[in-house]
Length: 421
Picture 1: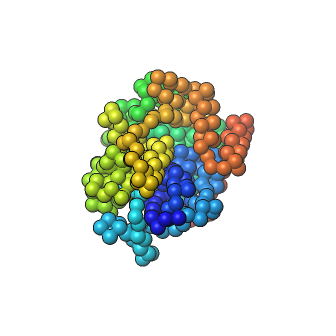
Picture 2 (picture 1 turned 90 degrees about the vertical axis):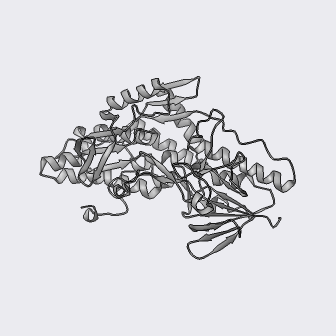
Picture 3 (picture 1 turned 60 degrees about the vertical axis):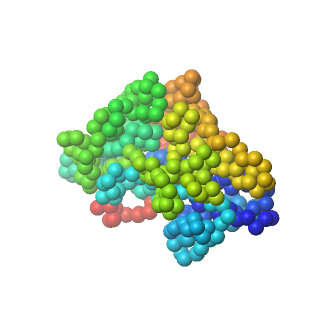
């Protein structure tokens, strides 16, 4: 093994793909993440909506690399990067020297200048976010069951999702199914079928990155489930009692934010140019400007396709970037010519709208309905890590499909309603 030290910050899709791509390269690798697990984010909303448990979509990073003596895993959070001294400083005081640095630190929620909305309108990026949203959704029904005031009860049974991208659409569809089909027999004082699920989008249509015909189908499918879709009006106020959309106030005790993201502070650490979302504007080989030994991948990087459109912030894109950087590092170490500039290959866009309905956009080929739903499910099961997870998720979906019962309806983190008052 050489003395070349590669520090990878971030154990998401991009970071893990890079570490996997450097297997056998003869380098020392230190993988740093502020959580001890890799998260399959495409299914995170299913944890938030009681379909899957946390262990079905997350895996301990240390276990993934237990048989790789070249990989050291550290649980820590980056405080700063000194590109001149080639060091990474962690918040616990530890300093790591590097020969090559890869930043795959992802993104978080963006509230467009209204960070004060976050406590009442959580986003969905981590397991903690998912279990928080799940707890709030389930507690809303529990509180409504005991509420005597009709106005308060209606507010408790109104769920507002801000943002109609894939996450917002998927959340709205499953919450509507939960209320209208799964829960009605379980409550005595309320009719959960009267639940309002409101999906708010500032733009002109849901799922704006999909073809218009698929977007229109998705909206029709949502409305068939009972979701109220409000388009062309931004949210102007979020509070504990509800949301204001334009001039209209909707009493709603459960709000979920799915309207935008902002990148990690990587651009600030490196003192390099960033786009409006804070992503590092990288070179064609995904290195940071003026820093050939520092690479940025995934949601932290601003990468343009050949047509000038940005590479989407999805798992396949991050994996392609991580794999590409691994090839660049290998070429440099072996003295071989560098690979051609990074080129993103779009493998299609997928989204579900509740059970048995989905849309898939492969470019020339577009699918919708139950066929798309089955393809969507097979694709996601394939990309899960390990046979146990694939079997477990497949069984959970089959059980829900056959019985209509969600298997993860547990109120966790805060077991009583005291703190949720």
